[in-house]
Length: 199
Length: 389
Image (cartoon, rainbow over all chains, first blue to last red; front, side, top):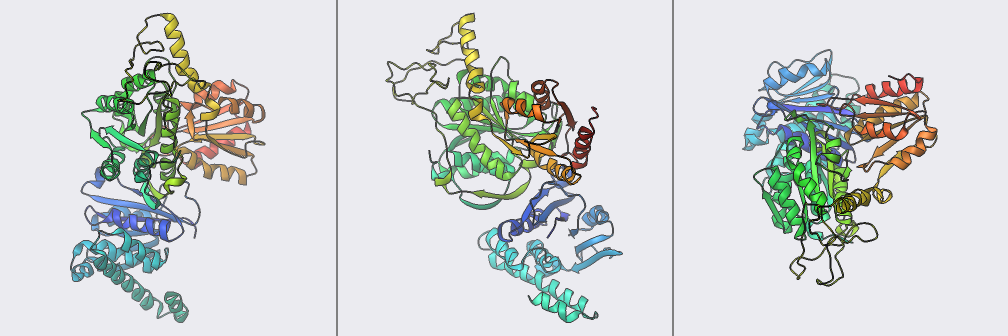
């Protein structure tokens, strides 16, 4: 896979940076890829829309900063409004559908929605919404191997919270797989796509 | 020698450059850290102070950077491998005691996670404009050793090299990191303790009544002595003789200052570390260090695709500068291109050494961001066309 740039964004406290960290760590430690993570450090990181930028690639990453994101995860309305134009109508946008109601698909930009906060609340703790989002991201983008990400979640979260976080990851992942299936149903090649998912 | 395994967090980690630096220090056997928090270096101190109780050692948050550097000098003389970490404004405050460390020949490591300057400048953004300050920021004549990492992995590795140089040459060694590398998270592989080579200062074999603290060995470096074993010595920032006693004379000054400079310059072949790629038959050689050495690569690839013969030198150690090698290459290369995130610092040394024999194209950047590889490519193209800026 060639260089792919991902921006994870939301408001401070949602676990935006951790979500980006887990994407990078999954790719670099368990996924056999290169991954460089950067995060916002200015005043924007203290209260308003904060963001993490992850670059993943099969090749060594030389230029360390994001040029133009290919994938964006938006977990708040402010973050969406601030960063969505960067996609330039291309790529993949993943949003929490209850928090970013105005999200719209564009010509070449695919939009995928998930009620991540609600799912997290149903699991018992809203705090794991970033892990729900990570599962959703893993299913939709297929950038990083499912087992690599799941293993990273299991080994990176605080002791005693593994089961909750894995449940959050699985919920987001399954939600994403279902969405892909329903998306591919009307199309002719639906069976082939299903196979890919199963693999 | 092998390192103390207690400080070595063997395994594959996903760390930022700052945390990797702290792990490098612990792996190298550093057991004393005095510092004062400053962006973008604070994460080094945070990591060190959270890990040191498990390893066994001391972390002190001092009242300021003057005190930090003073504490590092003292701790090193007590026998501990010691370090401090800071950024531009704090680096300026440390200069007085860095000079003291150089004069007293104190093994120590100073990490500067460079941000944009002068003054408070750009606290959260990258710069490489402290390179000359690292070399001669304190008053008087002396030489130091400086390394510049381009990734968290190199931040780990080079911090170990820094301690080894400090111990071997009894000199302050600067790890000139930058905000981009410090705050960038990537995979860092920490080898088993048995695979990490570390140096320790040479201790005297003479008895306390025969030992003089400033008698140089063959490599121009004097042996140190163990603390608490009856070696009553005197050390001072004043010009001193082999006993360490102040001597106010031009002869004593000539002797000590020349040795402080010579112990680095005459051992330069042992110290200098560079990476070379396709330099032998290159028309154009790009030279870079730190984060800029990474950002330069896409420009070099692009130029090679266009058929240009471009070589690359990465400075692992920036000071001492690889004078001998540059002189050789200046005979065959048509031009050097040097990008750095300042308005022209290390390039001055390059220009001095090639002495007009070949052209030098500098690609400056005032800081706040890394170079756009397109700007470096443009300079390579310009060098190929032979149009001096």
